[in-house]
Image (cartoon, rainbow over all chains, first blue to last red; front, side, top):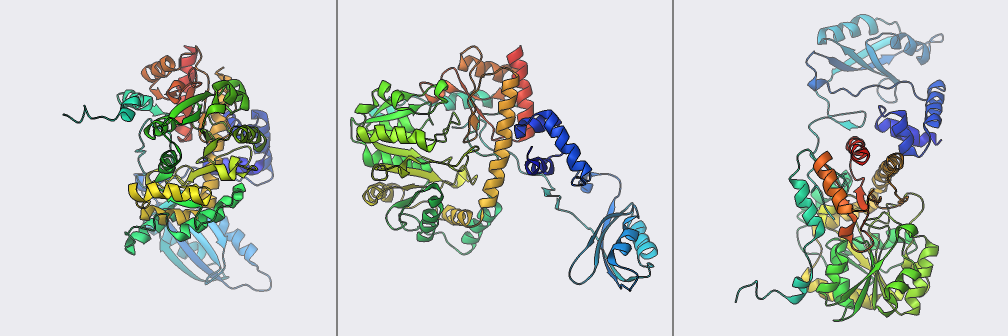
Length: 161
Length: 383
């Protein structure tokens, strides 16, 4: 079972049945199920989620990207700060990045108020945090490799040579 | 005198396209899922499209040299070395309006009235009319399901191709998805040399092989000087509508084709040439991604056919598989399937002798449609 092909396929569409995955990879279904379990157990696959276009959802859903500067000391490293931030359910994504700031956080909430409150009351007060810059997401055009929007119609001839 | 009375005999000799007939049937059906499409469901890689747009913004809207932009010919020359082909961009390559134009140029440049053009069948539908328009006599060479639709010296012999002047080859093949290995091509090459034929080798699907690398007859001993190779950007780069292809062959031969091309076409579309140049420079990853996607679909379709008991050899190229029609009547099956289950595919007999009793199933369609189409075919077959 070639795990890279399996990952390629799942990154494309994780909702296919094990049988259909097996057919596409020329493997048998048991081998696919076993490989999936192994990828999950090894922590390679951490989950399967829907890619949601929030523009098409009625309820308000606010996202913000937050840049966070921190100051380390002898006892505290990035790892420890990160763990503290990651525990908040409002934090959807947390990455240590190179460049002008240290952490990149994606925060989700039901309103702008909820998100800004979260940043000012939960993130900013963390002792090592020296600065936060919050960017509210105004629109999104592509998520997880999928272009949002109306897409292109298939305007090919229905039968052609 | 009306134009109808003045129709040329050659045009009259060519019957209406069977594909066209099936297209018209399919157009009348609502919510049709089509597995009858002979072109990619992807769009051209964005980098190639932006190069075309940039060229327009820079005002590149003039003719190019007859043979195509020098840079593009150089990039093509470099590209085909991966198939073991070596052609000089100076006088051994010509850029054309789709590989289709290149094939037509070759017929006009190398076929004399009465020359016999051997065409392995089932085959892409343009070769026979092309040979006729050039005054040639098409000679069908049926290939067989038990040979996985590969061309063999025996099939050539049986069809009387030893008397032919020209042989057309197309592997990976439309409509069967068949491919030929280097060894299998060596046998054909030996027949060709023994009987002194010229070969027109349409290799438009060269990048869409799923089990092994492309092999070209032109790289066999003594074949380069008697072979024209056709390739292009339509299939691998999903650029069908940009109409860009090329032909490669020995210098005198390309000169002869250029003679026709310069009067008929002048030069291939300039915008498309810029797109093609960028495609060659930076779109290998996109091609590979599409190839992997086709391969997954190919395996899926083959597996589903096997499960529903539809006999189908393991096609290893292009984006077609070619199963047998369950009761042997491909046209009745295709029409029934269209009527009852709204799935369009193309009856094999449209592609000439040897194709009857089979169905061309294109998997140039997204997985969701493909899955639904397979369910419907299964329902139809088990009905």
